[in-house]
Image: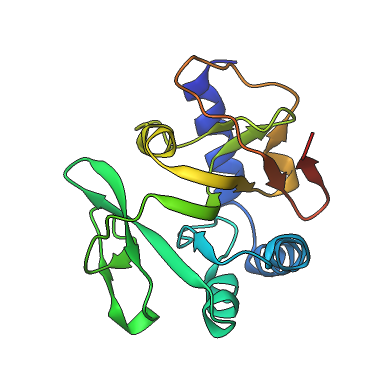
Length: 180
């Protein structure tokens, strides 16, 4: 299957999820993340929208535990970051996703968590097709790159191109993929 076909198929499946499943699966993924990755200091997470794996509780947990938390900001057709100060300080961004008001020049993170539409068993991801994350991930340093997905979003193997960035882990409600 081609990338665009995969995107459409898995976006449709994700859009059909019910709220109970999303909340339960997201809570399980959050617990796995906290158990395995909460010992770092700086985090870049995405703010979930539509039916992506929910990140609000994880963002709150990290901030409440004194961690530095950053969120993506779309600025001039590229992805950058802003420091998360609190949900009240977020504004709607280019795609309607809330983001920090001010961009930051930080480009070094302990842990980066990225969304995606489809992932594979080799820890590659397929996003929304604009290339924001792949370009961004190549421009920063991160000790650990993690994708959050529902288990049905993981396929055996995705078509991979030279610009695609391999993650270290993919966490689902059923599995922890990667770490090799």
